[in-house]
Length: 357
Image (cartoon, rainbow, N blue to C red; front, side, top):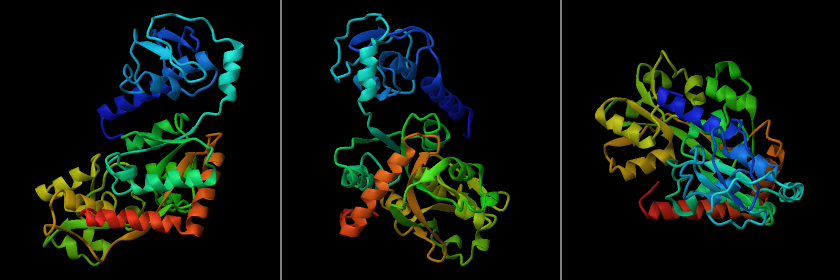
């Protein structure tokens, strides 16, 4: 994390998901949050499992953020059949063995997370919440129409891999690139984490990671990576720097700026605070269109790196293999039938017609 604020935010999420708590409650009752309570602990006491999303989704009017609960909040603890009790404060007894067994027998859905600000791939404002989201959901359905798969948006990309997946709060995250895991000595700490602690699906999409600069800056026509040494390069946090590291474009050869948003990189480019923006070409083209920067900012046509985008699961997740097998099977069916191409081509064509990359 890059600041004390981000550290505190991540710590709060970790505590909310992992901390212990006293007290007890059961399904089909309401429960008043006591000091030390967390959604995870409340769920385990009520149902005997860790599917805390069931309680969160029944209390979104109270829990604005699933990572934070307040002492004194009155939560509705859903029945095992999904019905919700009325909002009458109560402190319930331990869950009955029958309720625990019933909840344990009920298969919880596979829940994947992604985030905003990555058009055309993922963003809640996009049709279908992005083309990558559509591909993942379609792959799961083609593999097993009966399998329930949910996609949630958590807009802290670094927290996906640094915190949420390691504590098994979710079953996977997308889309992520795969660093050169055979050369971990050249990787940043974040990229080594991907290689050492995560398993990858088959590739869902191939993109070009490009460089964008102001017209006439010299960086817009650079012929070699060496021409970018000494530059101030903006790359949003959460994005892998593996290809930059391999090209020798890491500190101290360059100054790396890592804001949370793609738009911030282009704003800093126009303000003269950075010299180059490093993002994939579709994301960059979308930002240029949205910010009306046509004719002012261009992609360097001489430099770029091809990379693939994947779904990631944590190696310690007991459902990890199930998730990857499901998605890989569905993806293969989509490719063989031509459905993958149909989805991508029609989606991008509509984006182009709408004036977006």
